[in-house]
Length: 378
Ligand SMILES: *Cc1c(COP(=O)(O)O)cnc(C)c1O
Image (tube, rainbow, N blue to C red):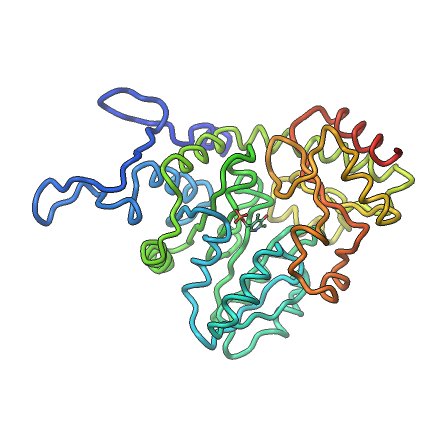
């Protein structure tokens, strides 16, 4: 069945008793046992909750994985993934990635003896060159955040597997509607469900999808042991968001194309980074693994003063962290999402005081473009 149908039917219920169409919110911490040694399949909601289970089954199916696991935030999900590694293990990480993921590696897991090397994963030779005898995983984002660089998932899966390492892909920007990394060889997919999956800037959540049973068992154990699970109500909100994922992504992408054209044509804008405007080599890689360009873009303005003025003067767009909601949001990566990345590394990647990141929403593209113009020109 087409993914548009499958997303629209997220959580479509088949309750024999009532005929309910929407999955109920099972707001129950614990479940009665029918007898000694017997279970309904649900014992305690940290281990499994019926509403969360429907969400998890939906995401496993959408990503083409074995099983999925829902957490209370994207960072809780990434923490659970990293918890399968041990002291002495080494992980290769995209150098241009979500600042919170960098912070987690450097300030938490490093203390537990898990080390990370940051490389430009858009270059397979750089990934190969960073492999050591202790390398147990490669962790990538594609497109990257915020520079929108493309990593070849199949090529990196090949290098990872030859090195006996797992490939982990943060698929937050693309969602399973546009990109399904497991089909390209990834072993684990993670999401901040807070973004496009939820889609309305009203719920925090994180998702892990495992390609194989053996990995599902390890992650399932960690989820229950560490306990950062998604609540029944938030699981339901995510299911509701996923129902409109396809239509929201299509509309936001259409808007992003127009907005990127308008920004490129503006004299105060010196560069636009949008997956829909890549060099032909990156474009063919992206098109080989994704069916669209999404709605995240970054752009550079002439001076820091223009950047600061713009974020204060926007009226349709909100100056706020996060992305992937129906409302357009603008962020200043250097001082917000990527503040925890060391200045030298930021500089090298291009995250400077003239770079802004825009999450294009589903409003009228004319209103978004007009808003950017008036804010740039004040
Ligand atoms: C937001 C984000 C995260 C973290 O998710 P939270 O839900 O905020 O904890 C991780 N990766 C990417 C790419 C993100 O955009």
